[in-house]
Length: 114
Image (cartoon, rainbow, N blue to C red; front, side, top):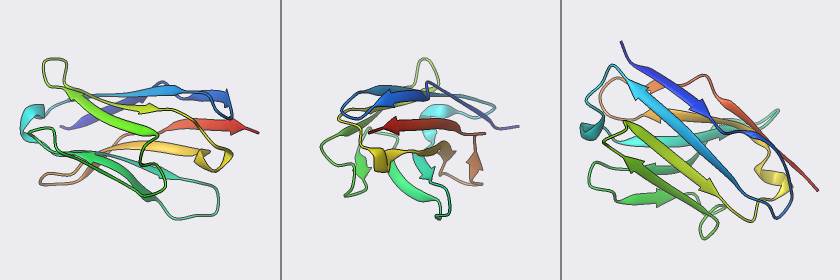
């Protein structure tokens, strides 16, 4: 079965950086569109970024120019590099498989202190 495991979250000061990773198993990773989503307390889960099978990317307006999504098909891993973090980026970040049956990881907490 599909398994997505996120890592790399933590506490960082505003203006800092974090790199999230999501290791996938149980799928042919290179054939899947992957995405990062986030959910802040009291808010709905929202799209952060997606990357398709040929590396084309899409970003939420709120993170454009600050976040970069990438993938390493040899490692079955998708990354989210987050720079210039703001307090409003505080959320649980989820990795998601967007091809076929949607699947989610367990999430990783990102907290940005101002």
